[in-house]
Image (cartoon, rainbow over all chains, first blue to last red; front, side, top):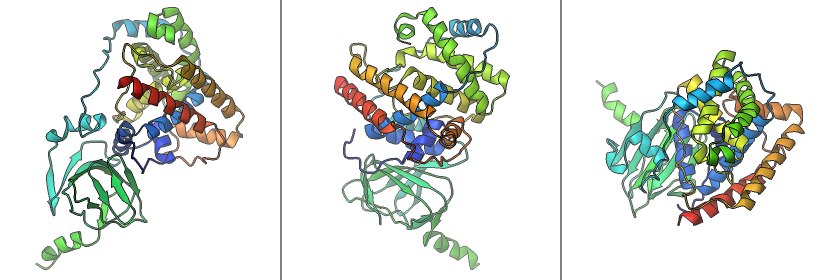
Length: 215
Length: 168
């Protein structure tokens, strides 16, 4: 549990997650950050309490006749929910492990060039989320954003034009930000990154496309 | 709720049901489900409340908050068919229990929040409700509603620190 987290979730993201309005991919990044950050877990708790107040102040709609008995029979017929064992410590927070199907060793990496690797996790289509592996000292090519990109550091650290981001830190990038994240020299950097629109690579994609355009 | 959690008390459950089931049904109908589906889902929510009672931690959530989180998840299931990624769980072990003073303080703060909600200007209250009913995709909620969320955050933060300490 790093106490050193400097970059946190915004109120908007926490409230949308609490209200259940975030696309699954963003929800995964929020859940992963909250798993690592008690400060944001407490802030999320406050927004959930607000949701509780909305329920509490909601004028009720009468339940059908026999509703309580129907519910009691649902309870009687449902299997007992066992107390889950605490997840073993690992590099990936529990919600990410659920999507990967294991810890880091279970990730199926695909190279994307310059030593950087990615693994796209399966979520609903409204937004996408991937694990990124940036070798120590390497850079993710300079890119801008059409929409919102959330990047959570799971291991190591990276720096860009804004600041340095270490384990547990989250960077929230939008259309105004063009950046070139560079991993610290000390260790390979692993991030969880979600976006609701494709990234705009400044140099790389045009360069890759050029040979084909000249045929 | 504690009687439901610790003693599996069906009378206590019936009174929770009487209070919350109609509110959950209303919440689901305002979120866009029809009456029949809302009835069915409200029953599911109350059944889940019973089944997951052992996970209820009164130092971090009031009963209304706990009901809300279950109802929200049921709504996501019913309407969007998305998975909802949940944070890693941290719970009290069988030997440890939350501090009673923390529990009482959070309960009082949660009640104060409900009263504060009731005194908000209509427009602000409707904005907040709209966000939680799922009508707003990204909230335009002004942070200056004056609602005592900071106090509740600090309260939960303290409870989390105690819990972390107990887990060591």
